[in-house]
Image (cartoon, rainbow, N blue to C red):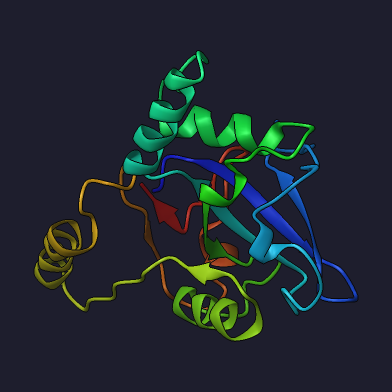
Length: 186
């Protein structure tokens, strides 16, 4: 679970995307600007992709040094910094210091979670989150420990891990509440 801002990329016919925040869960906010490498044509062939925009701690520290030198207030944490930079009406000079990792195709339950991540990688310019898959609780616990030791170097803000069922149609099978799907837990 990256500690950032959830953004859904809605694919357009020319391959460009409209980027929208989750908002109140029903109505999102269309972002006026987005990370340069994801603006323009041929970004995605997918209808919509959900991901998380975040800022690394080291990037925030570097930006804060610039902001303090310029007499500006430093950012307090990476999540709020990313949200403020994205929502800025004028293009922020820090916009391209943000990262976007994708983790879901909310429109499609036909694929397993692993297949969704592969489809994101194949059919868009977006980087999917890393996926781990195990066949036993012991194996999965070892993989979680390995993930934290090797992937997370302390520079990426996270607030947990999401465990998802990897069966096709799992959302149909397990259902959801008004707030979250029951085929996954954090």
